[in-house]
Image 1 (cartoon, helix red, strand yellow):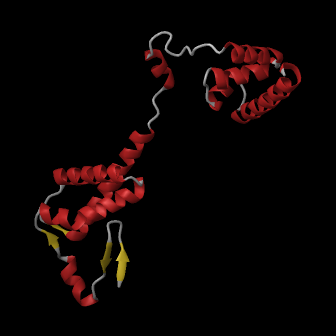
Image 2: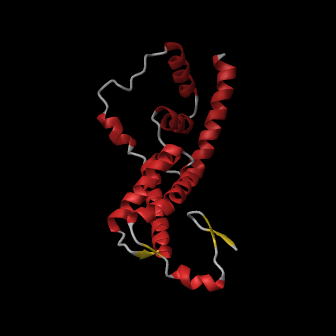
Image 3: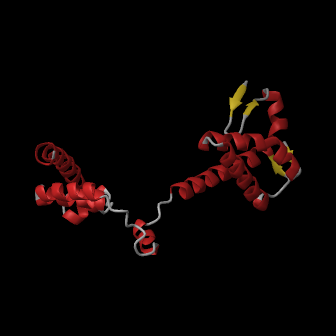
Length: 186
């Protein structure tokens, strides 16, 4: 019988051999490493899809395990501990990967004038005229979302409406702006 674990495919022993397998132990760190490094790498690679990151994560798993694992230890306990450690390391990796820094803090750290783009007078004038032609609530949502970089949630809070209402308002504002551009500014 063959079973798939998080580390690798292993053959399940016959019932007569189960007693012997249940007492199998890893005597030293070298045997733990040799038996599990490929499985840990494969587990990490399946989760991140990147060989370099998978190698780094497998190294992190093994280093963390090396610090805390007491040997000799039963094989099934060591493998369960390695999988648990791998899950923790992968979760930490994704937290770091997707950690979004506060944009306001980053903007405050930029030198004055760093965000000023070279003026494109024609495009700037057209946008200003278009915003002036729109009703206040439409021009305000477009200003918040596209000129000031607010998220839908932030713009909704600023305008005192729900997020759904802000999305609808943004859609209608863009549609109205496109109509006005065709009719008036062309």
